[in-house]
Length: 138
Image (cartoon, rainbow, N blue to C red; front, side, top):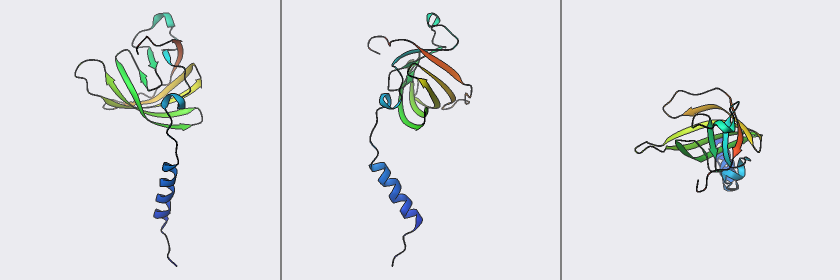
């Protein structure tokens, strides 16, 4: 009788899970309304690139960045997201951002534990609420 090592069993289980995991689009996985969100307590009438973010189902962009979600891990209403971020200024190099997003409801969420590649972590909790639809063509 041949004995199978624990490592081989674990590898087999991981491969079986990966092969049976359906591909889910980010906008299907993160239950947020697409649009422009303002950081609380600011008003939707006072949107600036510093107090807003845009969610298009593919990532959390801003006034000077676009982003594409490349990995999502979910635990209840908490999402651990990795994005590839690109600045809008010519010559800016893309970077990786990791963050924790807590979905409160379809039109509000909070972020925390934000790590932008090459920068110190931002650990503060910031709460956002939906203001308006994305501009045409975004």
